[in-house]
Length: 114
Image (cartoon, rainbow, N blue to C red):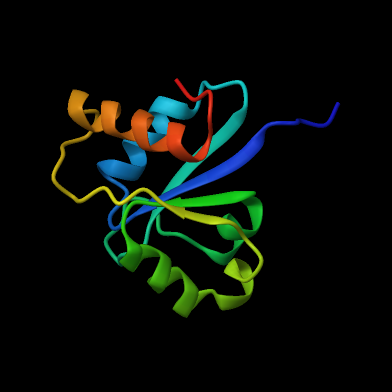
């Protein structure tokens, strides 16, 4: 049976705090399949064209992440919805205030998120 869950790729710079936290928080949501990656060379998991192709929606933490993806992978990102949560790199992995902010920002773009 084909999954009806939306595939979301969370992206930040190094995939160690913000996007990894988002993947962890939302991976068990029955509406989504969540993965994460980073745009920088030293990222824990570096974003690829294949990952962008997999995703139904790309969620970036900062505007510069979207710009970098657009420059490096223009074809993969061309018709793909890309949402920016505007979350600065001011948090540690799974920090309660980061989790709360992620949930709040995701609710704005994806109603019924908890």
